[in-house]
Image 1 (spheres, one colour):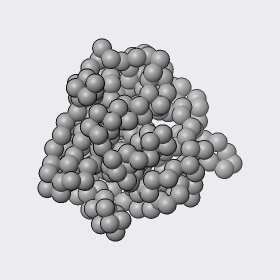
Image 2 (cartoon, helix red, strand yellow):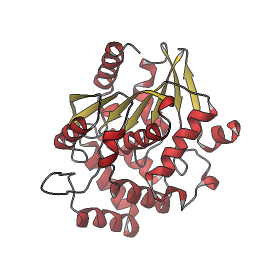
Image 3 (spheres, helix red, strand yellow):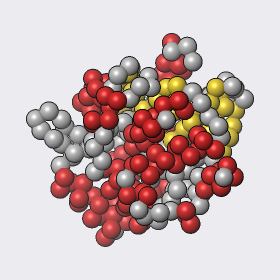
Image 4 (cartoon, one colour):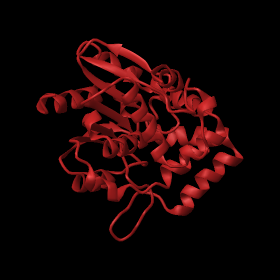
Length: 270
């Protein structure tokens, strides 16, 4: 079973420490997005990197349309990885929807996790006035899904630029675009629907694992208001406002991302 999961999720192990950090990518990405910052943790931690089924170099034959209709299927991937490697009290670092996937996993098996580190998280992307503004109207998200279906390459170009939001770093936008384009369009569209139409606001209050929220500046995917909402509703959470702009600080501003994570873990006595 262990070897099946290792192959299915393309698990990579690095580092030398006794404490483990699991890195979970966001929508449309694979484990390679962490390459700009993993070296900063290798001397002190064991690092676990993986791909969700359907992304990167995972086993595409294992993709199940029913399982991955919701984020629960992706949370099961995380739990399978933890179980296969016999992990306990793991530091979980998730980007974007990867943050919510890790949170859902922690609700089912909190013993696997010591801390959740959420980079650009959002529990709900849809506006729900007057009390919540996720940043998007339903018509906007439906339009995004429709564009994925009709012109996937065009969608990848536009969405990569929007997500990265670092016009002075065109190579990063190109890198993200290539990752989107390397994913099967049907799988990508189903993941998008699972991510962008999820509503995990009510789950926040039930989380028992201490959490760090890294909120980016000028992030059109997860606004500052969303970060504040999570902090207000997530018990035992810490909110850090980053100078980094865009939605992918682990790529565009890895030094700041590493510094804030290290500072949090040091103060948390991990």
